[in-house]
Image (cartoon, rainbow over all chains, first blue to last red; front, side, top):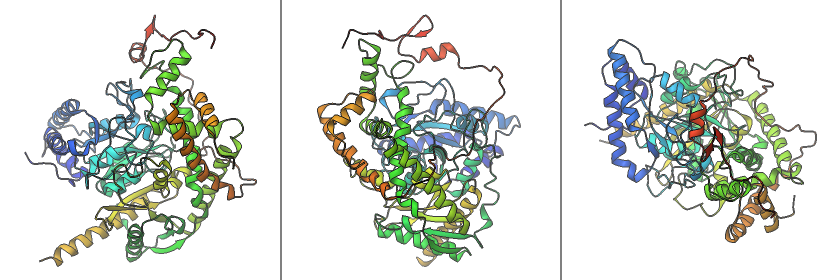
Length: 490
Length: 100
């Protein structure tokens, strides 16, 4: 059997399945074969849903045979981050505290994927409760970067990014609270989109920091990421923070280019801590956009320098509140003890890993009497300044450009003992979450170590279409270079 | 904000968060939380006088729906996920224990 190519576009798979030229069953088998071959090395999945996937594929093929159209993602396997609820299928958040739990309902994105004909192929590994930037904080062991198994895939959606990069699934969903889609996308050499806050329903996404969390797509190409985002976006009455605007049309205008667009390169995200080889790729991306007709200039967005500090108070504060629900009473782990209060403590102490405990403690401290104003209150005001400075920048620019991650993929274990150094790898991605704005990481060549570099395009709220047009221009520029290199090699 | 977090503070916070720390964890977390809070202290340099706090990125307020009954989750399915159940309810250990 032919193995699924890493870059077989989802749109092409769906087209051929819809026309009856390829069987969804065959598509699923090809991807399961690729998984069987490389999953032991990569460990992208907490669980495969292969039996359900085969059944779903048979149903798609029967519908096509009966003359029905199963939808824009007909027969396309999708990997789901294991913090998205799937009815009757274990959803763990890579935490012992939820091990074995079967959600009684599907997340809205899972429902929408099903309605579009997509096939859920498995639940992907993540840093426990999405807290981390390397997928090492998983109770079920780390995921490895498919480009170099000694390196991390990034995180927290490291399993989803690795699954796409290894060709295990043409598409994946992740969640992004401070860069958890974009940073692993960059480190694994795939496209990752954090949509505008509220664009995609969070119903059934297990909460980390509710004012920052957003679900988004990972895919090998900008077009496939756009297609997946179109399918899952749109208002949902089950999420009161979902925006009422109709879902955006993204794929249709992808080739419209960047002629005349004003792009600002963010000085605050190009300085200290950003590796020189990564900085050079962002400069090359700026040149590519300028070459395609954009007006590119360096600009300052001063408050972004303080985004990281504000985030590491706000996100843990919200997490400490959200994770109070894991008390051993209604679902998940219970460690028996003589009273309810001691049972609560025993359960949480045994069920949460070190990073989750650290963030709960940090958040509890930032919210506690005597410190609330100095930490949480101050951070919320800094959040206002970030939003204000972004708004000022978007008076002069349509889009902003920066690195996604300050470095390429780092070795497993390199930052595990020093949480602050791990937190610093989110410095470029965090501001978009604080502002609620969309951002995309698009692969743009490699660093000195030969590993993928992602560049980040940031846009004002609801401007995903413009943002993805620019991402498509960068993708084209890389393809042009690859073709030129191929022609130059006899 | 400049007072460094102490092991006593960390023990107090762990109690508030319903977590129990080993001596080793207590020592490690005290150092690590202090490092993160030191880094966070650089927001002190920013003048936030008169700046309103932001709790949420969207200007949505009072999102309402029609007050119509709709089906909820199946009781049996929800109870099936619970660690202990009695008479269609979640069962917990005694709430009042012996005096500490």
